[in-house]
Image 1 (cartoon, rainbow, N blue to C red):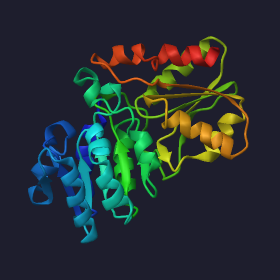
Image 2: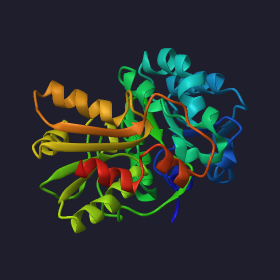
Image 3: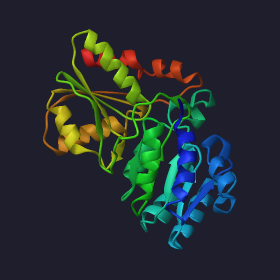
Image 4: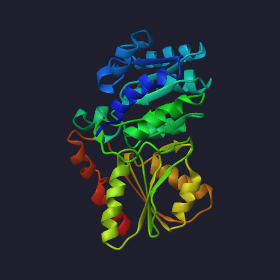
Length: 304
């Protein structure tokens, strides 16, 4: 078991063997984001921009305009909020090939506290025209989504947490832009989750099984574009529970409800997430309970 951010650093080294235009930028957090792994392997392709995230983003834009493929990393709160105008105007507007791979997202960031817990990042990144948003559930998915991001031209946001996470996928798993994975079939309720909450959803489904409820579980790893076919299948069950380590506004729950309306479908949706408040300092397992996005909360939402 390891953190997605570690899998990210390892994936960059592997990716360089296939993409010789890869360059990695960080904002004085290479140890925390694990881009240090790439820096040690390819120091001539690593740029530490210091604590200057907005500058890092515009440097990446210039590199992309020159034919390079920059992956830029820092904590999610800084990548998507402090540098949002630069990413909007210097990367997304000209549709440049810059990838943000941000770590320490959500209350999973734990003891770092509210100032460092990005709970708005997906909402911001979803709103930017032409931007792709990907959220891996485990290290295998992280590696796959890094390679997926590198396979297409244009801006992309990859969201990762801080903690070590349990494996959800084996090496045969497949991922695509605009896709999702149904990890468990069910006929009574569909649980749609992203990131670390995917494993929580699978654990909740096992508890629900013992209570006579057959729950389907979807990993909605592509937040934008969203897999609307998966949403339609989930809606056909009549009841959906969404769960995310993110604010309730603009994240997975919002995306699912927007899709249901757009497709003219009808289903009862219960969205679990951070409700109109900032995070708190504490152990991530305690914070998942505090903000009602833990296994027991998913079970309760599915039953009620």
